[in-house]
Length: 462
Image 1 (tube, rainbow, N blue to C red):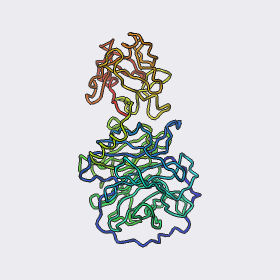
Image 2: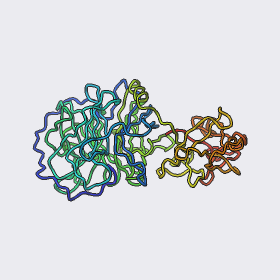
Image 3: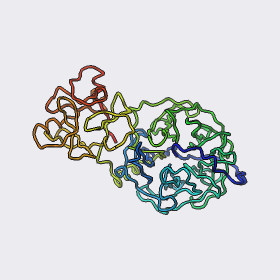
């Protein structure tokens, strides 16, 4: 749920927590928590961009082996789309159920009409995230308020799944609600799960971690955590240090698969910019987070309000086999990792993500026009044009078929001059020069100093 106005006119009618609380017994692993066999992750999201050229309110998927660098599936197109209600979704969430299959939940909202009210959420079943079956909407309440950003976790003491979501209470501020279900078809009566007395939205849970259950949420454009030794509604108490990056929402907790103590916290900036930021902690109990360098992570292109679920190697492999990886790449600057290589007015440069047209930053790295062992950068949105140097400046020109053009548009990919895990690109016909940025404009230059090496180093991703 992103950049929504405060919907104080939407009120609950008679919202006493009338459902009796069952005794809560031993806790099991919950949403976002890894199982022993997990070795990768899947992300669910929808897409938007600053001028809304990328606006698509279907279910999108991406995969990652480390939870930081992401590969969109299905060419970053949706793999499923709602067929009822608003006919669109926001805020998708994936839960692996107790039987090992998956359920997908999402807000019933197509676009940004914040006045639209739905008492329902979208639901799909999936055995493997390759097929989506049993599409339906599940009703959560009868009140004149929304059901935003649904997530779920298993409550072992109740023997039921808890579905939490954001809605407005009788005092006119957003709270985190909960309904209990066994089948994600019929939900029990709604209860207030977390109401600290001020506006909170976008709840995300980590269940049964070191004797605590953790709830992260948006508070005053920051991400904050609460915790409890039980899963009872009303039992959570705020405890963590708030984190933010120029207004952040949609917290997503992700357990590292390679470290027993490391957790990541993802957050999304307000719509429609859709920039993700990530923080790291070595102790979820400490409640303090350190911002990660943007070099270390790359979100799927135009992704918004994600849900992340650990998966097995086989599931990762099968997802890639089913949906395929993008036919294009994006290039991130090493020393300005918020910026990506793009063309603008047919000039090559690096600009800060997110921007439109977003297709300006998509490239096909094809065999070099002058030497097939090299690469040429073919524009996705101007496929007759390639990046080439002219008087050492890079520009996007139509391939005229000459050997001069082919030479100017061919580069040899090498280990990154500033980081061998990244990439640098040496000119074919000016072999002492590399692609680099200078004042954010791309050119080919000799490279010797550390600063120049950083200017000439890029991450090839998506």
